[in-house]
Length: 599
Image (cartoon, rainbow, N blue to C red; front, side):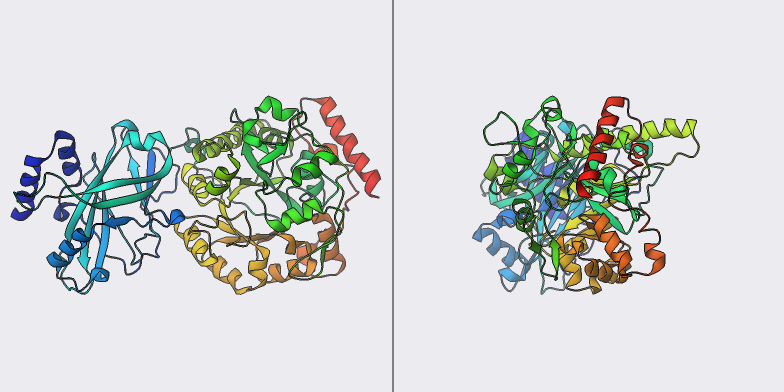
């Protein structure tokens, strides 16, 4: 039941508000009617309110108070508002005030609350399930405060804001700053008192139409201890061009390697293609073109040459990778060293080029026993602005990628009907982008999701996202978001191997990547510490060195010496489902040509 005081306030407000403002007031109600739960002792805690073992069936709006990227706290209150709150609550000072945001959907009776820390930010978020049509949704938000020093649970209503569906639909992700309307507290007061402003960072997550069909079959990924980085290796670390069918097949020809990591982006017409950098050299054009500016038809015509590769990677600040990766690329014939000792690579001239594949072609042409770690690429806001880089929404990127994977599952289901020995492909998703990982986790439940992190050591990592700037926060975020594991820069583990036990004891798998993984002794250190796998360049040479030096127990490296980098005679048996005999023969010819060159 509402107190008489609250009812009087509502009646007073009703006399002064227009019809639309009246709807706002009804959406939030009064403090006694909507506030539930306790006040967390710290805002450095992550909260999930949508927690299920199956994909989303309706849209979810994920809201975070404040915008840490631009150092904008959730609340910017007028001094008169703060003075009034202190007076009403008997607070000793402004610092004694503790604030809480209460969210309520217009179509639901229940509410959800989130607290602000002393710095005015909230590291936790709230997930609001939108069961209605998005255009009809209205979300009321009330700001409450109380005195920390007081034993009383009395709370003061600072003001309220309403966000409507059309505002959210205009951009599926963004930042909203709205005036905070204070309830009028006396009959002579102004019709509308503005208490200040409220800033919210939001992300709309829409359900994937196909995901629910596959929600019952969980794909548990058990990778090989060595995973091929972009196939046989990134640019400058192997004779094969990275992220191509040739590179993927070559890496998995090697004993001890059953999985490869690859990078996915979208073309202008929404086709997922395999490419690492955000810009690509297009023959006949001046400069470099964003991958997303090309249609799939234009993309299929690309086949990089040695000169194009060198020119592309000399383009300043266009790579999504780190400075150290760029150094390897632009000094392909020079030696490069790691902070963790030894020569990483002499540098390889790429002598074997191939057409850039789409994700669909990789899924259809590679044998199902080749596992894939699919990294979804997404540039930071600053990079997009600086490069004027066109890029799709996160929902579009995730939906298109998932659809290709689900299409391949449907094809695999048909194969299993005809052949009971067929097995589904081992697949996991990775991303440095925290929001992409959230979408991947919430849109589907079949495939594991891994959070990539390098703190602030590389440009791959978002330098301004509070969820990524430190391992501690990235680890807390991965746990609360129900991710399956993390992939860290190897240096972070080599500097403190105890993080392996901490992360794995929390039920998360742990992999690493980076230049340091090209050194056999570093790989041994990490695997002996309990690491699940390492993602490495030139995995064939690495596996051979580990085996010959007996750096790992025999049961781990059993069979690693069976094949070598030049034993590629069974290449054609690894490519499956190819309707183009000429294409298959051409791939086979290029592989055998490579064998002759590297002997």
